[in-house]
Length: 110
DNA sequence: GCAATGACGCTCT
DNA sequence: CAGAGCGCCATTG
Image 1 (cartoon, rainbow, N blue to C red):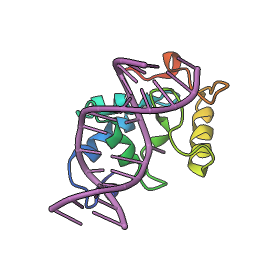
Image 2 (tube, protein in one colour):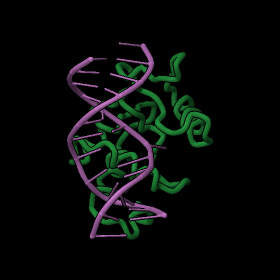
Image 3 (cartoon, rainbow, N blue to C red):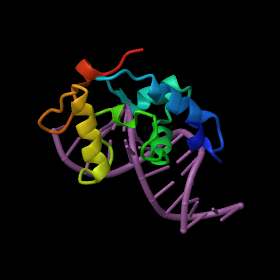
């Protein structure tokens, strides 16, 4: 988490990573949800931004973060997208027909 | 420093 | 249900 923080401005990044790290296995959280828990409600964009800056191999379970529609928010054909889906399914998260997750069932509640 | 950009989300057509 | 519009703001070029 710290290595990632190098050079970043606000404490927000750390908060974000911390919150994400709290998401339990087999559960997912939306960007907006993370934003709220991280103390920057209404600024979901920043969550995505923070993640985009997150290097691969980080200890942060970024794959458990999805958009409010229950789907992946990266380019569908990108490697990252496939990896994310694979990781989630490996944890038991089920993707529906339209590549969306049933938030009512898998959304993490804190 | 200014303008464009983006792993978002909610409301209104 | 698909689109468009609008808010939000750190990071980039």
